[in-house]
Image: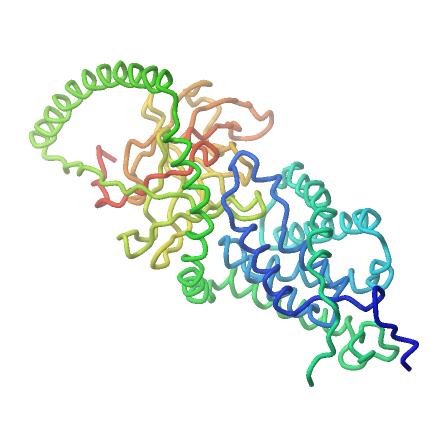
Length: 172
Length: 286
């Protein structure tokens, strides 16, 4: 068995739980940070991006349920319709889980395109929920947040990938 | 030890992703319905707002500190320019203010003579925008004053240009303001030029309000100013609301389609005024 898991540079790397929790918290802070109100439609959803990253690389720790809770937290923080982002996050993570093993092996710049599609799915679900609850007007610039979100993906990937530590067997 | 890479597990067990999604789908529908239809989760929201308030103020501190620091290093020339401009406008305003005081006294005396109800003065409270929803189509904001500061649901919210919206939900340290442009909002207004009373409706679109039920014969022109009439007892009378920008005869419709632009804008600055004072008496004859 030893030869199958050589020590050294190819030692498996992964993230500590504390890193995952801290990064999600920081993303949440970025989400509720004050943003210039004229450009509010450019605001990327950092929490969703970080969630997507962890679902790709640590799917054991983040699943549909935790994504749902994070979405609910976002709804509570900005006074929006409760449950809207929760549903959108859950659907997005579900779609991501369907392609997670392929995404795992892609380099970040190739991941950016499917991530754009996932962000579009999230916003579409939000619009669907809004339609069902009675909203009728959706400005086209609403979708600009997808572009800025996708532009954030590679820097975010590089930052989070740098936080990896050698894989220690978990005490059970 | 290799088992720690269990995302590569050959046979995953437990609920499949599809059934999990179904569960959370149903859960979300339950939450959304409870919130939007029955407002059953307002207590949860209020409790959560109290918990989140320190985090939100903490996040705002870098921005506020930046503002303070840049405010400190302002150029002398710029200060002088601003100062002289302010002084000029102050002189103009104080002239207007003297006349206004006189007029107000006169108005009060006349009202006493006519045995009409008195208008009470408005007290306002400055608040700062704490959060805006992530979806711009949700026309509401959260501000950093709540029931601890004496804010009550239904209070009018204004900025320096005019009416912005109405407080719809209050928690101890923050409150939610539904904007005028929200689809469900309607405000009784008065055409300042002619005194014509009507109701203005939000459309859900930014910077667009509509007057729906006004006959074609009504005397209304583009550029007319609309102020609150105070007839609903919610909004104090006399607050500027909107300007008429477009009148569409509407062809076969019974009513003209009138598009207005609200004077207040959330985008302009982060401060708003909440009208916390007693509701003024309804003015005028019916």
